[in-house]
Every structure is written in C-alpha cells, then in structure tokens.
Length: 469
Image 1 (tube, rainbow, N blue to C red):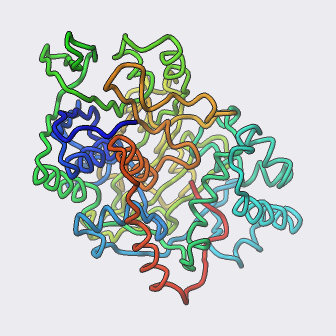
Image 2 (cartoon, one colour):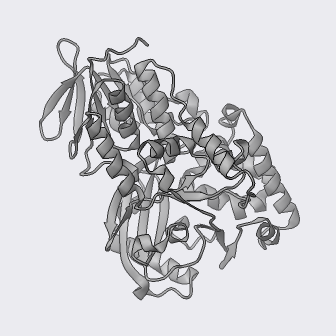
Image 3 (cartoon, rainbow, N blue to C red):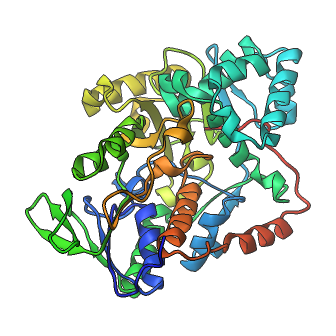
C-alpha cells in the first residue's frame, strides 16, 4: 500500500471507539477527517444512557490491568491516572444454589465438581493459557475441544454456562479459538508480569471517557456529524467516493472507512465484487438483549454470576456495583442481565414489559431476598449486531480491509481474529489499522503502560482461577 497523501480528505463512518480512534490517528497524521455517526451520541456499543437519575454505560464493560492498549488511550485522555482498581468475586448459580468460586480454596470446595473434574478443569485452563497456535484451534469445535480436555460433567457445569454467557446457543458453531482467546485475555497479566488480576473503571464511566474523547477529536480538527445514517457509498466521475445519507445529503471524499458490521457494509456498497459481498454477508453475528436494573440494594457481592440452570432467561448476572463504588449510582446497585442471541431471534420482538416480567421472575427465584419494590429503574438495550461468531476456520473466510473499490476500506470487529470483542481489542484493532492506512509503523504506546503496571503489582498474588464472560 502506498503512503496516503496528507492532503486527502477522509470520512470515517461509525462513531464507536473503533471509528473514533481511527479518526484521531488519521487527524494526528495531518489528514482532513470527518466522522459520521447515525446515533445522537458517540460511542457505539460503549455509549452511555440515563437509567433513572443515573448516567452510566448502556452495556457492561470492564478494564483489566493487562488491557494496555485501552489504558494507553485513557492515558492520552488524561483519565488513566484516575482509574480505580478492585478485586472482585465470581459466582455460579447451579442446581438452585448461589455458590462462590472466587479463589483457590472455593474452587477446591466447589460442590458440583469432584476432585477429578476440578483437576481436569485446572489442567484445561493451564494448557489453553500456553497454547500459541490459535490458528489450529479454529479447526476444532469449542464444545468438542472442551469436552475432550475437561470431561462431560465439567463441560456441562462450568464451560457450557460460560459459552452461553457470550455466544448463546450459537456456541455449537464456534471454534475452540474462542475460549482460547478468552483465557488468553484473562491470564495476560501472568504472561506480562502483572501478578495480580484486578478489574478497573474510570469514575463517571464511559460517558466521561467519550466526552473527553470528543473534546480531543475537536481539538485535532475532526469534524463530527451525529444523527447521520449512511445510505450508500459510490464512486463519482473523477474517482472520488460519495457518501449518501438517508436525509438525502451527499458528500464526496478521497478515502472512506466503514466501521459498520459486514452485512450493513455489503448493503451500502453495490460496487463491491460478488466475492467481497459474499464474504461480508457470510460473517455470522451475535446480537444482545441486555437489561439494566437500578436497585435499592445489591443482589449479591459477585461481579459476575455464571448460570447453569435452564429456567433463567438471561445468561449471566453482572453486578456492576460489586466493582464500581455505589456512590456512582446514587447509592443504588446497578445490575446487567445479558442474553446473547442471533440477530433474527424472536426475542428481539418482545416488548420491554415482557422482558421485564420474565427477567424479574427469574431474579426473584434466584435471590429470595429480592423484592419488586427494590427496582428503581429497568431498561432494555437491543443490538442485533454485536460481534462476529468465531466459527470454524474463521480467519480463512475473513473479508479484506482494503476493498476493490479505490479508496474504500471496511474495518470492523470481524477483523479481531485472535481475540474476543472488548474495548481493549477494539482500540488495538484501530491502532493497527490506522498504521496500515497511513503505511506507517504501528505505535507501541502500550508497552510503557505494561511495564509501569508490572512494577506496581509485582508482589501481589493471583486471585481468580476461572475466567468469567
């Protein structure tokens, strides 16, 4: 790829953290950049909303000590030094019981598994954390791989709820590379010398992060247009790329980067070849229906509770107030109840009230002390395209970032091929992609963060034996 001219005019379509980071790096390199977002605010999946009297993240996010790409970006924003780090606990709801599995002693006492099962589970995690060839794991079903390594009962009691927590029933189509990537992220601290696994957050949540990011984009000269939903991209006479929007507006650019899901990009770009269209449409996505609950009192003191019982309509309980100081929520407790489903799942057609009744009935069964009057606010987020399903041989079918249409690039979460979708991976993808678009060496600002954190926590002990979702 030849070096792009500094005089070129770039458009980034999609104002999530991927698009925002790309826009920042391009602007820093002297490019003229316009960022378009269809929603009324920036952030995409990381955006915030109002829940009762509280403004917080629409979906649950957590930062690990080893998330060095995200932490480097937060450092640029002047927020990394304000992060609060907390040790959290992990729970399991199985056979009608709420159990803790937050340390080695609790792991050894965990009733649903016998000694042999626990040994095989530990051996599986130990082995997966040291596998280097993720490409080979793409050829094996995750269920088949885990059953073989851990045994049937351990798979059903431990691994299956973890898989369903992120993949829903689509876990049947996923490769073993998915669980490998999950374990790699959770245990990255050990490999980089960070001997304590802690979760962190920025006071004010992503609302504060995104506000600061927006200010930085404005400072760098990036034009930001909200509530601009693209309709199509096409080549004009003379070679420029025209973006047409649903309101009829039209604007031409030298280079266009779409950060939208593959299926959406395929519909917008009729000039792509049949092969490109097929690859984009062939990426299978997972969607999410995620309820946010603001409660008068906590449910438990677990950050994540994995669920094995089939009567529960959601796949995990994420108690954000077990991580974040409740002062951030006006003294209340904040809980997320996610359900990962296919984009065409009938659950998307349920009303908020139907979801509320189903979810609260399950909460009442799980937590006997819960009362309906505890609910201060209840809201539902629906997103049909959240992340690509890591199917068998996924990387071999991946659409290219640079398309056959001159100046058109498609970069989205589908290009996270050896990781799981989270904010750190998204920022890392943006950094790598920006370097490629500019034909420059990739920035390695994360190394300094890793070294600093390793020094801060070199004497601490590891506390979590099993990764959560």
